[in-house]
Length: 158
Image (tube, rainbow, N blue to C red; front, side, top):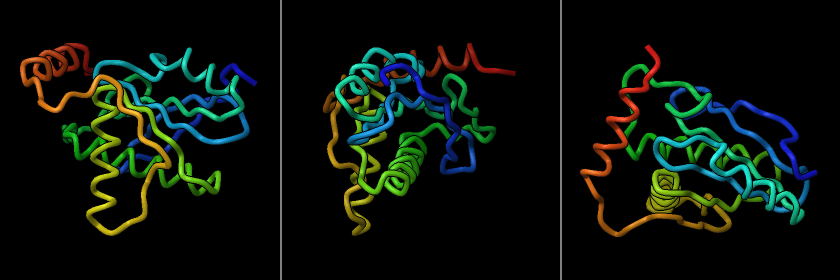
């Protein structure tokens, strides 16, 4: 099956709801994490291609994006996104019996990389079977971050 087979809800690190679409229903598992200011729909074509190749793709709205919960206490730091990524990795591994690969764009890539680094520092086994980073740089562009945060604040639900 290459279309969206179902939409699911996951529990984030702060009890927040994360909403994701599942593409496919067999084979290796791939978690897709979008960039700041985007939604899970940014990965739709990629997710369909992954499912068409015989794998299962989970495209998830990160906290404060798309249909996922906004966080009332304003916990939108990289560590907060990383904690959600860790929870998603653990949940998918529990469900499928194998660690998912992850492809993260920008914010999603930073979250996945930080989650993997934290797991390694704490002596945990790897969270992900593979880590693909899209649009990640070795230096942070704080003006760009401010622009994305400004966009998100301007479009926040009241």
